[in-house]
Length: 381
Image (cartoon, rainbow, N blue to C red):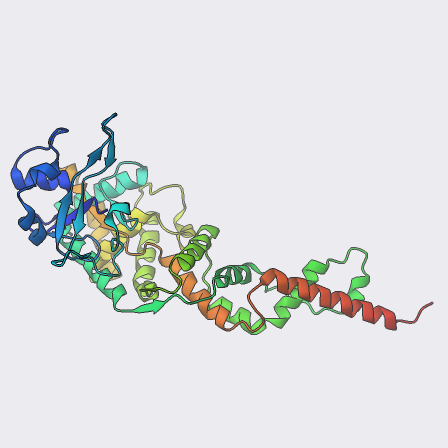
């Protein structure tokens, strides 16, 4: 259910009411909304309006729906994309592909005009400055969306990893594999010997090659990202999806710029410290803006920093409505998908199954048996 879409004619992101005002010159009212005002503009809308995600044309307008009793809005006016044969006009990999009626606003799209937090207020001001100073405009924002969509859609993979692979990889990443210790049965004679700790250390010794692989493939990630990875793997199992790892150089560049800007701009982008961005993620609106500035700077870091310096030094914009832009966070779900792909590789190289708890229990049982046999061989006196 795309609530907004891009107008080629007006070179900006618009919702249904905004499009109606620009096309008809009339202001929507509660009794006559934007969809009704646009009822005679079907052909023009199909030729002009593009999907914000995949760039396809073929839009029509769906009217809002209200409760007959309370008159509360049950469904917001939105755009539906239909091909000449009446089918879904979105690219099959578009996040809006499928039943538009059941989809909410795309999570990767960000309202640069939002004033819900200090972070989004700061981003709104910078976006207004950027447009007023000619550093970027809504056309370039749309170009960036298309560039990222084409980049991702050019490389795909099928989600085929065992569903337990995510939990297995998560357990391996959290396993204290830097703690090395060789077990000997005599150690268990200690009065408070920790069998579970001994099993974990033995697990490390038996999986040294696997931990070398884990260290190389699994980047540190918080619990929320791992949970999201598990949800994505379950939801998309057996399906072909974007290979988001192709975004890695661009993600690293955008994240580095986020850290630099947050640390050197004297702007409040939220409570999270810049040095924690690589572990817990950068604020999405800041990440989206940094990606945009890098995109219009041809991914030249120093050119992007110079653009930010210009933004920060610019006077307060004369028109704060310029910030009413829907921006793209091209790295939406990037961290989680990277874990899905890495977990698949780790699982393929795991010869003894993917049940971490069961393996620890089996190792502990084996160690106890070693100790029993060792003790039976000791002289009794």
